[in-house]
Length: 573
Image 1 (cartoon, rainbow, N blue to C red):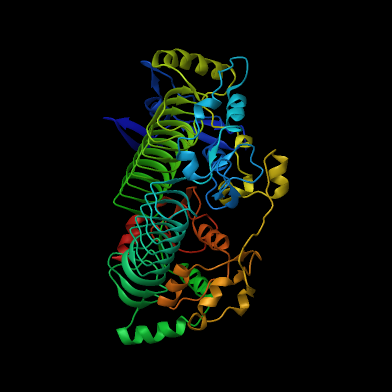
Image 2 (tube, rainbow, N blue to C red):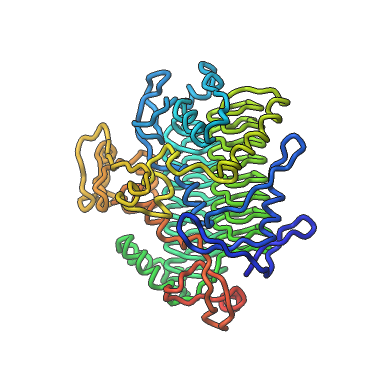
């Protein structure tokens, strides 16, 4: 068993004995080491000079993540009216939501006071019951946008400009559809960083004019490539190359030969080319895990990190256990989708927080517990919703510092007696239907399974306005024949049947790079990218070269060649 150990304040991965537990939700066995509990103790909060030790979890890490993901809806948005101003606003919440929905302008404004919804803590009732009552009446921001310009049709984005249908993005400009970071002029992406003029790329960094690439970096003009990088350029359908140019299927060509063959390959449909890449990938050795410049790290797709265990698609992290898409964050456990934070425990969606526990969608916050949508220098709050610039609040009621520190231990004791302390929010407390949350992306359930579990299910709806006619995907013109009139038409998705429209910026991008027009709704394109990723689980597997035991996210049934790091580096370099 690989566990974690603190030595000189650092988290280290070592071989350890562990304690077996049975998940109370799924019944699967999972392990907790003594050293992991030491880490949990280190993260335990201190209030009024007293430490409140976090208890061991009763559910496995997968079930804990599934629960957190039910509280995150990034992409499913509807048009509604702001309950304060009556103006149209895009909302991540369903029209049937029990609470008022305010546009970002109204929610951030001074015309309402979230403390007016405050309620006294009732020690005769469970905390989660009281929290759900508060959540059901406090106004919610329709879509979270922080310090943005012309990004009204985005969600959970900050410091972005001129973007459309981005979700979970920071510092981007002129980007559409996806969640890039620190990028410009990119369309249809999944966790790309420092990229420009890229299309349909995922888990990439420092790319320029690249298309349909995965796990690539520091390169330009790549098409349909996997794990290609380190100053490569002009490669097509390649896997695992470094410092290469003018290659197709990893074979070297002259510039003239390359351009001639690529021109022929581009006549094929994108699904055909993606299938060719997938087939070729199985013939070329791949690394057991993707990782660059790491020390003491287990997981996959992690770069520039240190002392992390089972962390995925993350970078710049230190001292963390169980995290997905965590960036520039230290001292975290069971926390996903966040950036530039520290001392995080059981969080979903965070930005520049320091000390956040069992919370979601909070930013610029310190020492908060069981809070949602709280930010802008909120600190020392418990069970609060939609607070900004507040301190010492419980269930949105204001207290003095002395009162807060006196009530806090009583609440913890009350929650311990009721078996609530140390657990995340109940799944049926989520304001989102299960199938509209990100839990459906990674833990898909049928409508019958969702309803049997007592969770909400929402039927698909399509609403596209100002449409002059509908174009079937099979009838789409070639890009050179697509006039501006196509912007007033709706395209019918060839997979889901949902209607979608093109934007002017998007059409200009396709024209510039002579790309085929999309035949699928952007939601289906996102699903394809998510499906191309390996999961958040490490499997035991022997290196197909040397036979050494290794950990990998490639499932046992994967038919390709998986090499350990040492063998892979020998093969590539």
